[in-house]
Length: 442
Ligand code: SF4
Ligand code: SF4
Image 1: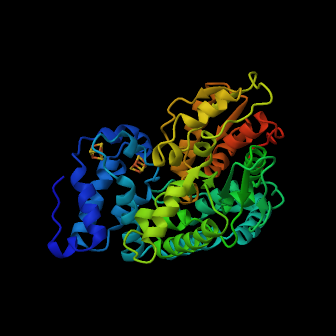
Image 2: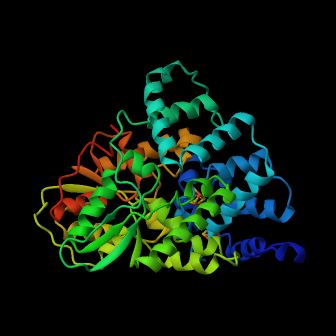
Image 3: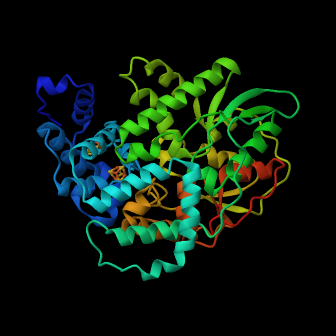
């Protein structure tokens, strides 16, 4: 694609990067076929190619985007299916990330929308506040029906979004998991030492996921540390275009993780929420221009691993056959498209005795996508219903996923238990049977 940036614009490293990405696009349109919003809405401007043109124009003109441009960029899930499909290697992720930052900086959203985004950005990364808000939402849930039901609009209104938020609140919250700073020694001979990302929403909604990871890892000789003063990885605010907050969190985490590497040694930083993993693996890029943090960021990104990547390198010890349990494996977009981890979780489940079924249209997002299911509830619900209908065709006993956002989204529309891949692996290797009630959500 031909671009028309001035030399002065190209002096900005972000614009130079955008220019490189845009020039790689040959506008073939292959990506449209696998884009969930294009599949649902059929509008070229809701396809990757359409959005690439909109972003190109916004950046070249260097003027505040119009409401129309913002509408189509906001509808993008950042699912990255387009990156998997693209034959030219267009890095849509870095392009849309930049577009979101531009929109946040240059576009004035309506007051209610700004307020909602500010609340989400403030509450979600703070587990204590998030926990309190979930309790309040649970109390407010019975009153959701009193909110007005607006007609379907191009941009959903506040009451529709509040309803979506209330619907996502769990009926009960599990007790909090272990606090940061905890160290879980290896059982038997020590074979390694890892940090386990605590996550923010996950530690409130389903602390059992990391408990299963700790139980499995320590049983296999791996010491696990929950690093003190670790914070949200920054993914939530990064996807809202609030990069000041996201980068500050990245720098904070790099500092405490590097200290842990120096003091206790770490073989890896393990992540059980793939949405977080994709962003931590991108810290190196996000901070490439930061003289003080670029090197540390690259080092941390190299240490970051999805838990299934790490487990594939150690011999797991299955203790019982689970051949009668059929598992539908839901491939989270952040894992399959963001991190290109596709076969590994399924192989681990199969090797450890489960009957694993692929879900038809597995490349399509379930509609969770960070805060997307709150900000774009109508598209998100359609994607969830489509995902659940696809899952139902394989008649599973359980649904496994590697990302809490997907687990919450899918569990909200099915009675089939939704569990994390690590819970099944822990069970198969001597841990307890997973709760089988969804991630503490139903
Ligand atoms: S598939 Fe790749 S090259 Fe083709 S239009 Fe989409 S982004 Fe551009
Ligand atoms: S990230 Fe997903 S929703 Fe956005 S353009 Fe790409 S495929 Fe479509």
